[in-house]
Length: 115
Image (cartoon, rainbow, N blue to C red; front, side, top):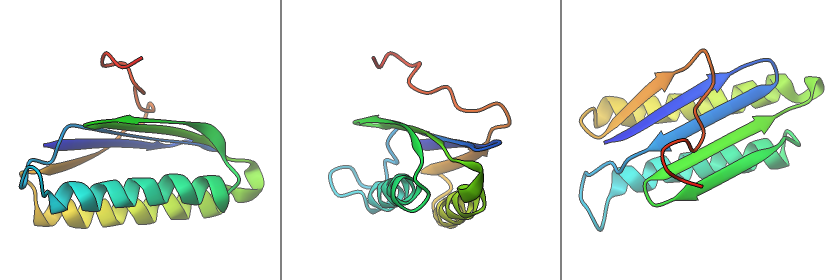
């Protein structure tokens, strides 16, 4: 199962995905859909909202933290919430493969053994 945790703060947006969806290993459309949305969110925050921050990923793990200036916060929040809506649609269709969690305190980052 892929667990996705996200947080929206005052100009800081974090998202962490952990685990494999496990829908169909080797040809997993659920994992591909989640990955496409996560990459789109990161790219949009960087290019359209001129965010600064960090992104890390490896097999089964994806994390980003994006800091956005006050002038672009509305766009950044709209972008992140739109991606979360898409992820929730996937969760609704594949509840055994994807879980979305809103976090009030931010995401952990790569605290699970990734350097």
